[in-house]
Length: 361
Image (cartoon, rainbow, N blue to C red; front, side):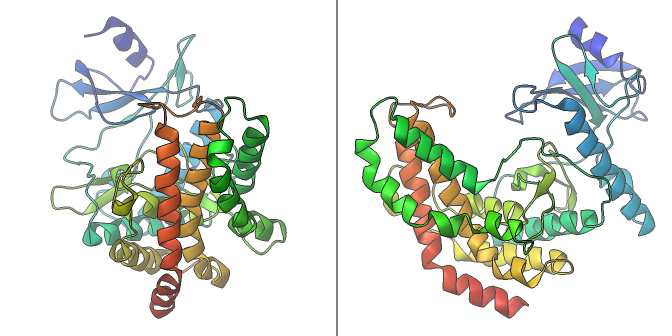
């Protein structure tokens, strides 16, 4: 057992009787370990090293998570929900009373491991419905949260900022790639005002921000052995945002018939059946609080996220591939084309999406 890890665990007094600490392979941002205890009657725990380069304000990060998990737990208790400890994460306090420990270089946190649970990666219509239902329920449970949350990644889904960054990168043309993508930039600019509509409506007081998960993937929820959803996990990006973040970002990946960096654009299509299933589940649970404008703009959300990702990939391409890890020289260019093709495919389905949502309402 790594003596350094064991010393870190000692700062979480609840954890006793450790038998093993082993790496967990899932997770791209934080280093994660499973802390196993000797007795079957004891809990096991998940120990994480928080990525301080991504999440710069760890106190704010943990404040958000504590507020959200505490509020959800209270809602479950009010509903007399059974087996609550398997339906909401519980983070441990350290010996100084916080839910994170700083070892002088890195920040650590621990939560109770939910036994007999699993994550899934496959998305089919049935699974999309369950995911939509759960993420809608997650937002609905937090709609009356009265403790203010901060942005753990400021301007994470701010389309106006992403357009400004693209324009700055094109203006600088630091690696001489602008000429190659000039027509693509022009295509993107043609829809820029429309895609920035959410920020404009927010300034006008017509569109609210909600507490959203902001990383809606099927792998960010736990399932029991029977395939029932237990709880939403990976709460680092929970923060105020438009509901479009949760609705659109899930469909950007789940309803894409190809990988986000597919070089053969003929393979990139929008799976309307995944959309319908996810929308049906989401509106069933989130419809209780969504405003008419939010519902009306859900198809906009589905268009927004491949458009935004195309802008981000293209910006990085123009800047010389300094943000996203690339596997070959033109990787970000290929990603841009694939995401922009998905955006175009989603636009073709706009009227069908609107009709389907109208039918649900």
